[in-house]
Image 1 (tube, one colour):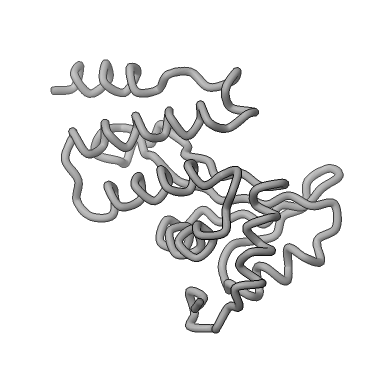
Image 2: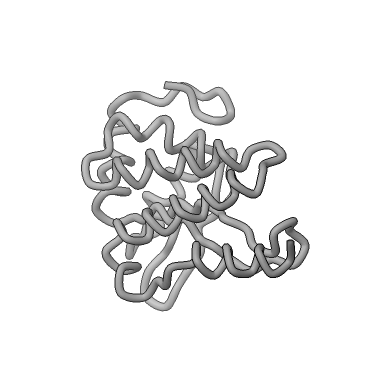
Length: 159
């Protein structure tokens, strides 16, 4: 397996990182208001792994040459927000994921839908997929509202 910068990644490394993502990570599809975007919103995939010691996160960051390691109160996150980087990382980890395989697959679909100039229908499909990803994520289930209906209402007001 080849990293986003052409480095060879072993299957063992990919499986190990996938295990970390399954256990201590998140694949999120965030819907955010963004006034510069055509429909007033953007859908963005974020990949994150959390640890109490940053050593392994710096190793992952170095291995992929992507993302950032940030310190929180008592933990550290390796976080990837760039869509092409997220797509490349997920494609390498997907065969090894167990718990978050469906989130990774849906995240890839979102990124693919929004890669080029996309239609209103493509954007609404991506928003619906993002709501589905949120429903699959344990912490998002109770916090996340149905953004698709808000976006549909907002877009129809502006048409």
